[in-house]
Length: 167
Image (spheres, rainbow, N blue to C red):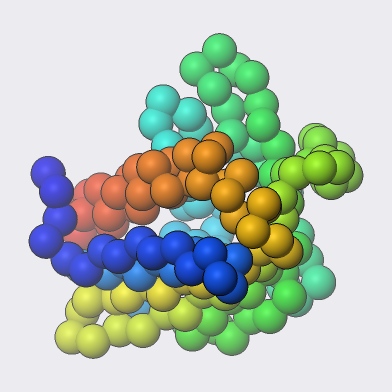
């Protein structure tokens, strides 16, 4: 079922930036946990039919989340998030990069700087996401690789998971 809650996705090519805003019918702590705990991230981060699989998550400034997007054929596409700033229940920033299973970055692949803001108003939590890229070419490659479609599916997975947890 499609949600009637806020969802916006826009691309600013002049500034090599993607903006996403998504509201969830869930409390701030529940949404925060979904973005910061491996056992919950693994349930929603990947677009179906893929699944996310965390190898390690060290949620602190200077820590890293190393994970794979696993295909139905069990092919693993590795990525990592290097945490650069954390304000509990308010914001998380990280540098996201494609890598191998040991966290060594893949040359020639785009990196994104993520800045996520979390706010709650009467039980509705909104996540405002800014993804900055080094160049227009990197931004366009992310879009070409299906970032909008994949991330939109992941956010829907999160909404479905949050709805299940309220039942």
